[in-house]
Image 1 (cartoon, rainbow, N blue to C red):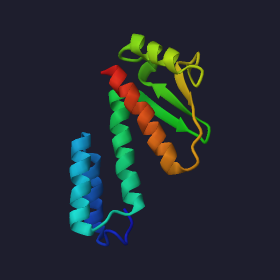
Image 2 (cartoon, one colour; image 1 turned 45 degrees about the vertical axis):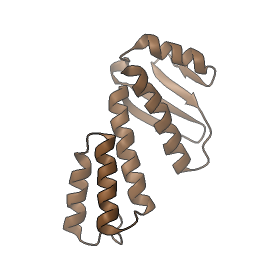
Image 3 (spheres, one colour; image 1 turned 180 degrees about the vertical axis):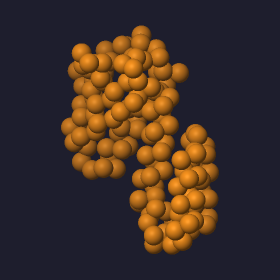
Length: 136
C-alpha cells in the first residue's frame, strides 16, 4: 500500500494483517470496497496486491505450490507433485496441447506471451483458476 494512499503506518500495518487473513474472493471484494470507502480510489499497487492475494487463494485450491511466470511461459509446481483429480488434469493437458504440457518433474508448463505484468497476473490467475475448478 503506498504511503500516499494510507498515510498512517499503524493503519497500513493493520490493513496488511487483515489482508493476510482474507480467506476467499468474497472477503477480498469486501475488503477492496472498504478500502475505496475509507481511502478513495485504489492505486494500482493496492489492486495488484489484492489480485495477488486472490491468486494465492486459487493456488491453494488448485494445489499449486509455486509459480514461475516469464514473458513467454508459466511453470506451475504442484504440491507434492500430485493433483487432486489427475484424470481431469490429464484431459486438460491433452485438450490444450501443445501449448500446455507436463514435464517429467511433474511441473505444468503453459506457453503464453504477456506484454506486461498486469497481463501476466491476469493470465496466470486464469490458468490457476482453471486448475482449481479441475481439482474441486
